[in-house]
Image 1 (spheres, rainbow, N blue to C red):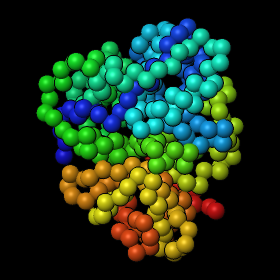
Image 2 (image 1 turned 60 degrees about the horizontal axis):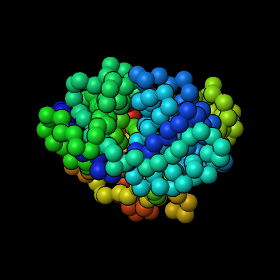
Image 3 (image 1 turned 180 degrees about the vertical axis):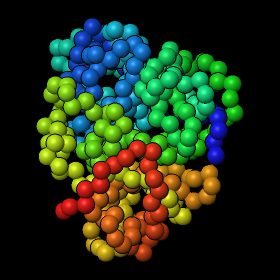
Length: 295
């Protein structure tokens, strides 16, 4: 069990939006209310295609009234920057890759802000994992690491998996409507805000009972890859799901978050890669999901 520690998040980057209309511009593009976000808050948010499929998920915060920062997996940042830039038009907003200006740390242990997605200076509280508090620390590139034992980035990724938080990665771009990776259950979707790309599809999925796929936590004895297909024992032809997050389990084997058809959970078994692949063992998530198994 990881009691405390700090990991340098080398696989993450930061996108900056600056200008007097930066928050207003992003408010019209993301699943979150960016305009009303205060200095003491952060937001989990998604950026969707017109079809409601996630192009990215990330943590956003507002260090100044005319600046919004977004931390996300570095592999999706260039495409997000390019696509968002297409819609700036005449808005008073400048977008840039600010990754070189920050050192991002994942911290496990006491000292985090009191509430999830609360921000205190450079620290942003994240969902707890394995009974431990966690927070993201965004500092200057020359900042000294917090005085805690070093943990690996893989160990931090395992904690992300245990928290039920799956980030959109290169292999899963446009694979998920936000609810498929439980984004709204983690506070990543605001259903009261105005329009954004894909908003009608996201809202319809929420209010018309069309959510038939969700992300669940599993253990596997075999390694998995993000974007790898999952099959149900009763259907060797059609995949039943997709790996959304994975990391080595410190106790052995692997832990993964997989988006699956909820109907596939009622009987039979789920397997990695094909019906002869490693069987997935379901584990409890730290939050509840209303499982609808109707077709």
